[in-house]
Length: 281
Image (cartoon, rainbow, N blue to C red):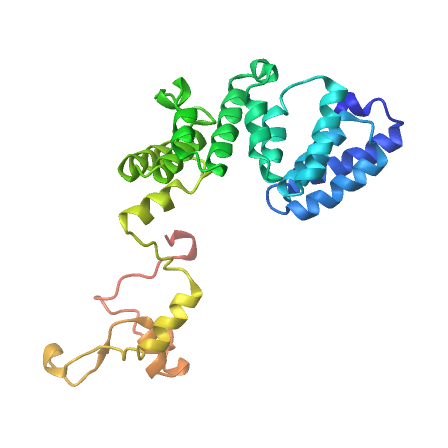
């Protein structure tokens, strides 16, 4: 990007760079905001390949697939690179044209992709097969050395997850469940919801114990428990002993809980010496 921006005047390059930084920061969490920043950068420097690519991804993340495809095609014409080929094919899927995505999966550009790009193209092709309800073909499309490998790569979790989904769609639920487990094992960064899908299949339900709404429901459904007191005969006199500081504070005034140190005899041999402030642990 820095190299691309050197073709612009310094002040303009700085303005474009600031907008591209915001696109990168917001793309995953606030894609609409990222899209707005990308349009500003596009108006300022539409002839810069990096700007067209960033605008393409912002459009893609907000499901503006026609705009995304236009930007990706422009960036590819400017650079001659093939690395955008899989996402361009996925835009065709988003536009309801899975046949075009499948046709792109067979083009020579696929051979120019690195390993990650080829895996991505395989995922897109399998998705296109599923769009056409060719579920068995989707399963076959995903079967590859990368899927069979025990080595965890950046694409491993997503590939296993897609394979599990394809198996489920093809009516092979038991195998799908096993592959969801494998996907969850590889997904240390949480890029998929494989763990949730696995729990759903197994009939498990996760409960967020810190959910404030759940806490309110529990409080509304059950009366507050009274502080538990120990009976007098258990302590040998008529004192009532409460089991927590909260219980004590509820039943005694604050003044009653204050201790006047002057009333305590310092010569009491049973009382340990008071530590100096510097010796407290």
